[in-house]
Image (cartoon, rainbow, N blue to C red; front, side):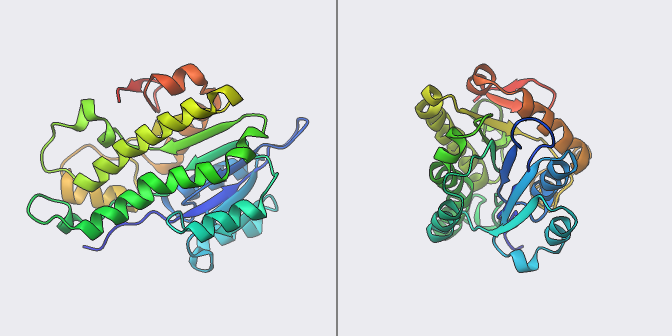
Length: 263
């Protein structure tokens, strides 16, 4: 099967009312979790900058932007340094209250199981899932520091928890490794930005009914319980993000019911 790729798009939204609008930037926002984040942030009146690798192909996102003046669609491939620098330059000095690093890839099943390892496949998954989030956060850190909420969020997975997932056989090596690396990168970033009031947190949505989750379940977890609907999962994630503080961010991976997954 082909690698399953979460669209690499960004979305910005601005909250109605109050002294200043809330701005949310979301990567991977042309489908799956990212598109649902975009819909719900826009629906609650926030202002949105949405990015993806191929805006011209993102029909659902373009339709959302057409119906919402506060939604702007931008091109962003999180594995492309030129794209990241260009986006940062266009939004220089623009406060970003919540940066959501959502873009991610699962990777091909046939090259990340024992006996089929591929160096190229490994680098592709690690680049997007681990370095991509770190690079975007680095480039936009001053935007977040200048904001009111000062939150950098990375969408991770319980599959990246060494405590919980490390002993389970026949799982996607690169994907799990990339999420563990993402977790460590975000923890390090949080330590560096803590003195400036920035909360850097990891959120795991669990199983949600997306293309990536369907591929994961087909290749690695057939017969498991049905995944959650995107609308329900995103509503819970947004409520969780609203409540996040330094203590919760530093304690582990935050999940939708308010509990913490160990690193």
